Length: 130
Image (cartoon, rainbow, N blue to C red; front, side, top):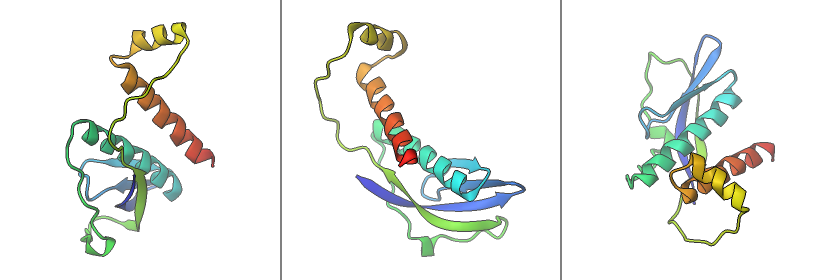
């Protein structure tokens, strides 16, 4: 399921920062507004994935018009960033080469978690290319 959360982009020198009022501590930066948004979306996706894994409830998105402006921040843009929120876990059967399974087992505590993270990373790269 996709959700859109408000993001505030500010400028400090040559760097653009992005933060999410609904997710304190979830921040990122970029050398351009576009890069800050892309990096912010990736940071927010990771933040949400961790919250979901911990079974923490996700906040409702605050409407942009209700976000209070901080006079000490040089706001460049207030926008909505779309992220995919993980849904319920579903068990599937996967067939893999035995040597690949051994490599996964050598670096991961959990095969399912490893494969899910690898799939998310691959899908993120695919979205950037599209």
